[in-house]
Length: 150
Image 1 (cartoon, rainbow, N blue to C red):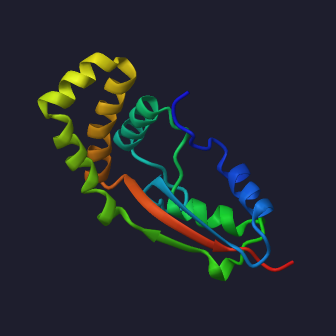
Image 2: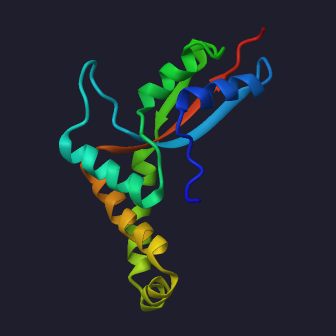
Image 3: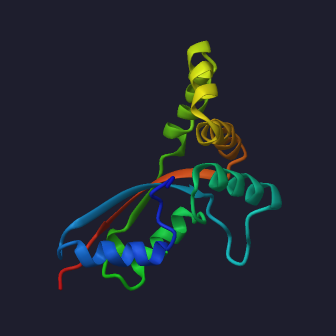
C-alpha cells in the first residue's frame, strides 16, 4: 500500500552495491531534507512538515544528500571519489505549485471528492511539499556512484 520508498536506506544502498557489476554506475533521485551541520538536527517546524508529508504519502524517515554520500561511501564498494550528489531542488520545486494549481480546476476538485481520503491526503501533501521547499527543508537530489572493480 502507498509508496514504494525504502525505509532502510543502508540496506537499500548495500543491495544496489550487490547487484551492480564492478565498474557499473548507479543513479538515483530522491527527496531529501537539507544537509545538517555535525551534531545538529532539523528544527521542530521542519520535523513537523516532513512528518506530515510522510503521513500523507506513506513515506519512511527522510535523510539528506550528505547522508546518501556517506551511505554510498561506507562500505558498499562504490568509489568514494566517484560519488556525486547534486541538488536539483531549483529545477524541481516549481513543479509543486504547478501541480497544486492544476488540482484547483473544477474537474480535478470533483474527481478528488469522488476518490476518497487517500487522494485527499495526497492533495494535502502537495501543499506540504510547497511549504517544505519554501522553508528550505525539502531538497531533491540526484546521486551517482560508480561501483569499484573487484
